[in-house]
Image (spheres, rainbow, N blue to C red):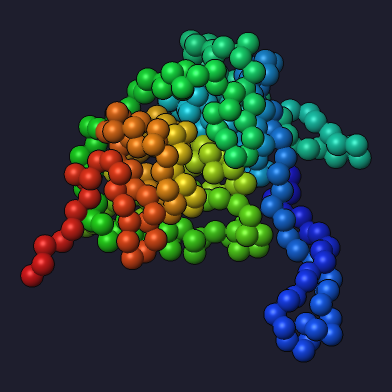
Length: 288
């Protein structure tokens, strides 16, 4: 598997006014960077997509991406995943091409559409907003989940505590899938990190597909950044009833959440949060 982080020597300027800083304003140190490399997704021998991602959990990423593209929704539809031969200038395997073999009855997507996604955007290759309003095989609106507001508010801290790559680099997003149990408690099922927030979500969804857990009823997906349209779409296609973000949602994200019956939470930061759609799922214990 490719590297997740790499070391780089940097010039560090310290401008805090201390005597040491005045005497030695420039210092040399090693820093850790999150790796960003391309990953090509092939369906059989056909190239379907290239995305920029942090290496690691690539099979989960590809599986989740195919769910997000509306290609598959059942693990039986995905026969196999494998790394294809690919070497850098030094003859070292790059692990930057993954081939997915799908069941013969799966309808292949339009591979004539060149799907390129950067680490900042999950739908850059689509032709229009209507093209990404995919019909889902799962309905968040039918999920009977009820979750206490205090539980949702606690999830950003729990997500942050589990972010090993962020601790080292400070340069990746995270997505964490939490199962809400009958007693109201939340269990972290899966956490993935990536330079792209949409990749982190695809890695979580792909893990769930490969584990046979779709639809992800009774769960909350907590993400470290903002709640954009593509994240709401990915959550809805996986049957996730609640998406919570530490930052703001977009107007289109709220609109799609309302259309699909998904509960959308933004600015969730421990002591406060905003509910932009689906507030009926979120409860507050009665005062005694």
